[in-house]
Amino acid sequence: MSSITAENVGLDLPIANAKNLAKADKSRYFRVGNVHHLRVLDDISFEIKDGDRVGIVGRNGSGKSTLLRVMAGIYRSSRGRIEVTGDPNCLFTINMGMQPELTGRENIFLRSKVAGRTTKETKAKLDEIIAFAELEDFIDLPLRTYSSGMTTRLAFSISTAFSPDILLLDEWLGAGDANFQKKAAKRMHSLVDDATVTVLASHNRGLLKQVCNKLMWLHLGKLKGYGPLDEVYAAHDEYYAKVESYHKLL
Image (cartoon, rainbow, N blue to C red; front, side, top):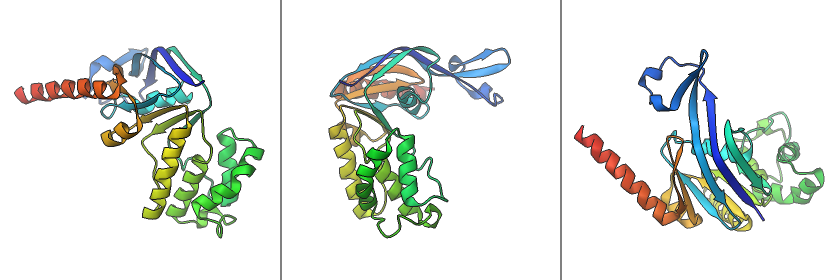
């Protein structure tokens, strides 16, 4: 059984340069001593259960990526509690951690180890990873000799080789030329099917309707809605229609 439960989660981050705060929404900023902070997430509570496919929507700066990173344990919340039951796989920046002086094969073991996989698990998947990336003739060359497309294919193949309990996605992943993108799309859908819980942050409404059964709507760091996808989208659209109508009257 996999689940993610959040109770009154909040996250505050210090601001390195506060010179432009005069132009900002003051409700999200506060000061502790001489340091200004931004309230990135504010009093967020939800429960994601086995079988849930949850989309996260919101305008840029609403806290979507930050909330995913709190779920993944990359950020520790400033307030509240978040509990994750199950094995999460975070597909955020797939090229992160790739070492140019190491060979493709060595990078497979390095990236898999960072992701928490044992050497035995990686060896069992090694041939599949290499074949999926279409790099059989190049796998023992240094990564610095690869084209950007080859590097991306390898990173994608490593990142998606293992089926997790909980799949956390900051936008849908795709890679390579048209033919590889078809393979990548099929692999992504397979990961979603195999995962017991999926959380996907995206601006792509068509994709979210295809993949998800629930929707989480963030606005300025607050949870404005969470529930069945169509119901939350209806509230989301009504809210922003009113906001835009108001601004046209100003």
